[in-house]
Amino acid sequence: MITVNIQKKLKAYNGVQLLHLQKAFVPGSITRITGPSGAGKTTFLKMIAGLIKPDSGIIKAYEVWFDADKKINLPPQQRKTGFVFQDYALFPNMTVKQHLEYATDDAAWIERLLAIGGLDTFTAHKPEYLSGGQQQRLAILRALAIKPRLLLMDEPFSALDIKMKGGLLTDLQKLFKELQATVIIVSHNPQELDGIADDELVIGSEV
Image (cartoon, rainbow, N blue to C red; front, side):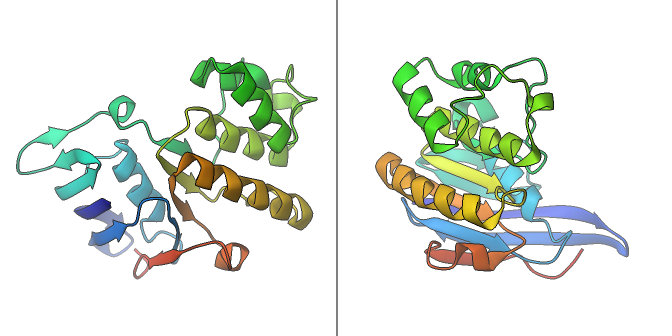
């Protein structure tokens, strides 16, 4: 079980607002996160990943990752979460294949991911020569390359058309089950995860 009970002060147009989140995530489940723009959805993912430090509280995923009182704060490298960034965060000088090879040396797994993402004919392309949708798919594949137990996805399908999104989601569901991964997805369009998400977390009012 992954449990989160954390607080973080966020800067808002009217001063500072406290983001307090308490949630348990069932292993192997898919949870969608919704809420208004600026509510702290991305901040929440980054706190779980170790990219942003909460002000107080506890994050426990298989072991204690963060405990403010005990001064425990595992770095992102030790948490080994897969993270799909909203802006993709791709390396401009790496080809598609090099992005995956940077994460894993499992050649068969890389080939499988490339096929699922429809990028198997673009392996030598660098990000600047890919469309927005292709870049987004690459960001998803890179996050999956490490075979994460916890996958955090920030608006991962925003650049994909309906047909591509539908096919990719079907394949990703199979991969999630195979990896027994717990998946947390921030989405501006929660309907796209209808029938897929097992649970939902709404992050409060706009800040």
